[in-house]
Each structure stands twice: as C-alpha cells, then as structure tokens.
Length: 458
Image (cartoon, rainbow, N blue to C red; front, side):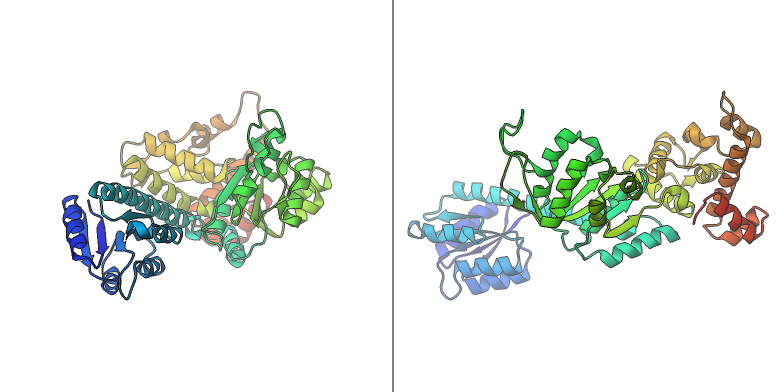
C-alpha cells in the first residue's frame, strides 16, 4: 500500500503497537506524541489518513480534526476514544471525522476501518479529478474556432459568464450548442453544482412534464413512487433545455412560471418547491418566427432570450475547417492509438467544398471514420464518404457525382460549384480574402461580391 498514515497519540504503548501493526500491513506511518507535533507533520508531509486520540494535552484530537479539515481537507480522520467518550467521537463524526476506534484497540477492527477510509478517499479523489477534467474539457479554448463568427460567440460568453442571466443558444443541429452550455456552467460560479441536460424533443410531451418537474406517487399509471424532476436535480446548478422550440404551449407556460416564481410543482402534487437554477436553452428552430406564427409564447421567448448566442453553421466558418480537422485528427489518433500525420493531396479540398448539413458533428464523424480506415501516415480520399469525394476532382467526376437520375437545375449547380471553389480558396488562404482572390484569379472586390451573393461568410 502507498497510503501514508499520521498516528497521533500521547500514550507510547498505543503508538508502538499501532505503528508495528500498520507497517506490517504496508502503510507508511508517521508518528506524533501530541497534537502540536501532529499539526507540524501534517503541514510538512503528504498525509492520506489521520488517526488521532481524542484526549490529549494542549491540542486535543477534536482541535486536530478541525485543523485538518481547514488546512488539509483531503485527509480522512479516524478518532481513538475510550468507551466513556464514544459520544464525543460521534460528535466528531458530525463535524467531519470518518470513523472512530474504541479502546482497548482491536487490530482487526482498525484494518477494516482503514480499508474503508482508503476506499472513500480514493473515490473522493477520483470525483475531484473528474470535475477537474470536465472543467478542462469545457474551457473556452477547447471550443475550436479562430474565425470572426466564433470570436463573437466567445466575446458574449466571456461578458456574461459570471451572471445568472438566462441564455438562449440558437443554431443548426451539430453546431455545438450543448458544448457552449457546458462551457458556461463549468467556467461559471455554479461549476461545483449539478449540470442537468434534457432534450425536450426526444421525450413525448405527456412524459416531458414529469421528467422536468417530477411527480408524486399515484399521480398517473406507473407512478409507483415519488420522483424528483430535472429542475430539482439541477437545484443550485444549471439546467440545459435542448430543443426547447419543440415544447407544447402548456409546458411552455410551466417553464415560464419557473422563471418568474423560481418554484416548481410535481405532477399530482399541490405544494410548490423552490428551486434556484440557471436556465440555458437551445433550439434549431427560429423562435421569433415561431412566436409570430403562434407556436411559441412571446412572454417565454423574452424570458429565455435575455442573452442570445447564435452558433454559426460550418458553412459560415469555413476558415475554421483546418483547425477543426487538426483537432479531431489529434483526438482520434489518441483514441485509436494511431500516428496519422495528415492528409493526402486533394483531401482538404473535399472537406472545404462540402456543404456540411450536419455541421461540426458531421465533420467529427467523417474524421473519426477516416482515421479508422487509414493504415498509413496520411488520410486519402478513399477514406472519405462518397458524399464528400464528389465535390472535387476533375469537372467530369464532379458532373457525374452531382447530376441525379431525375436531372437537376444547371444554374443552381453552377452556383454550388462556384461556392465550393470559393470555400476551398478560403481554406487554402486561411480566411485571407486577398489571397483567396489571387488563387481564383479574381479581384478582391469581385470575390467579396460573389461571397455575398452565395451567402459565404468568414
């Protein structure tokens, strides 16, 4: 065992017996004869578990426990007490001690308690590590994008990060709306509290109310016990309501009440429960249009739309494609234990020319597939899906790939091909329009006019 135990007891016989027994079990043992020495050893050494006698002169075991909790919160403390002082040991557990040992000490009992203390400490450390990893995963710099549109997103996020304002994230599927919601939570003041996400479109409306607000036993068929809803689970933290545009008017009214009154009512329950949550919602529906058409409540829209973030589609941020591709290549190289260095000639052109209806999520899937199918050092066109490879190459291959059996509209296809060429030039020039214009033998003003006509943004 690698755990270090600090043993503090003013009785020499107890110290000697426990030191021998714990050393035989494989523990590293530090020994102190009083509380003052114990504090000094705590400050000077990495300690996993503190075993201390309750009654000692000058600095008592309770005072040592309180010092450890204040200055070394990851240390598990076990109290040693006589039978007459068990109540004091129980009181110590209420303020943070893990367990207690009674005198005369039974070594088998000590071994069992120590094993449980080690297991709990390891679990706490794992949870702490997981939280740190989550915070790292959702840091702003891990949302990849250097283009103007993504910098605008980062700017808004940075300004409102430490507020409790509701946030509405709008954008197409696959643009990273949930990633942004998690970045808000794990970088904000509620980062140590729950983050609870629910996809409103994935749950039938008749069940969604119970999922959001919980229910009481017997409120409907199948309600065999009281159950908390997502809002209660997210109390003091953040709730992420994904695809809120799909919610029916009745539930929209209940969400509005939560935002206004900060309370919820379980299905079948008459007693409201106070909740304190930050609400972040997302949708790929144009909510302003839905309000005009009467499909979404205007009062709820205004409550949700305090801070609005538009997640640009991949078509609007073509200059970020090389960055995203490099990011996903590194990710899946590590996952699949490969050492792919890059892409063969023509592959990046394919990636730049494609329309990406599935946005960043689709791009990630394509790169994962390509890494899985590649055995050499460079990803070739053959590792890409056929939907992509028809977008580049010779004019003949492009025409063959783009003309369906039923025919097509020539002017639309010409525009499509023109847009693909411009996107490829922007990728090759890393978003610098003057360089892209040179690649296409165009004036810079002509390129900008074409980009406006074809709705190509950088």
